[in-house]
Length: 262
Ligand SMILES: [Zn+2]
Image (cartoon, rainbow, N blue to C red; front, side, top):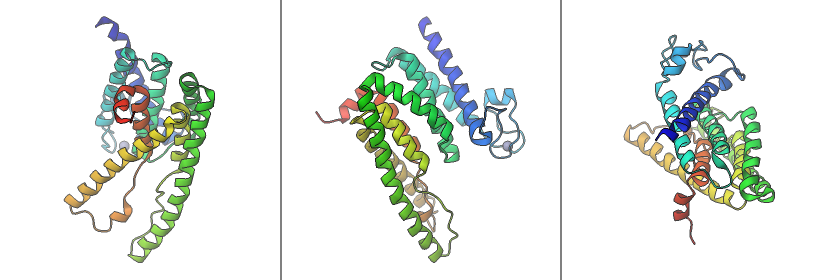
């Protein structure tokens, strides 16, 4: 039990790092004092540590701050006990921290930032290299990037169609992108980490997870009778689901093995 104190402390500290980066990067684009994304008021140290709501506008922070802390600590203990093959605990935690930052920022801001992508690409290349070899890592990266690039252009076509439909039915078009350019870069990064051919399974699992979430979203709208006019306004963030899929494949390979044929 005593040996678990170290991963618990490391996980908890990295949880604060993820909270800090998710509070600052999308708002100020640099390492500054954490600011409320809603009213730009600075968040004090105590409120930051305990996850209190913004004192200025009341924007809640509690659920996100504590889910991040608990998730990072749980993952740290899990990875300490089951370090991924050829990666080890430290690199595993570096990847988890990067995934968590992108996950939270994308969920809250629908945004994948280029500086985080740059750090992620470096980490993913090292991880992919160690686990799959340099060639399969690079091929995986190219495959993920190109596949999502094609989907991205389909998304652009769909967005044009959607804008016309929304104008025709009397709604103001909102310029919502079905798939962002950040998703394309993210798929490339995950391809580097997962390698060839595992990236295909990663994309498939990500789309499946996203689809399940989409079904729940539509069901919730139908149940709350909020469907009118909103069916065309549904936004599907794919980034977080691709990240969940990569976490499953890298850190829970036994679980994934049951799902793969052969
Ligand atoms: Zn605020």
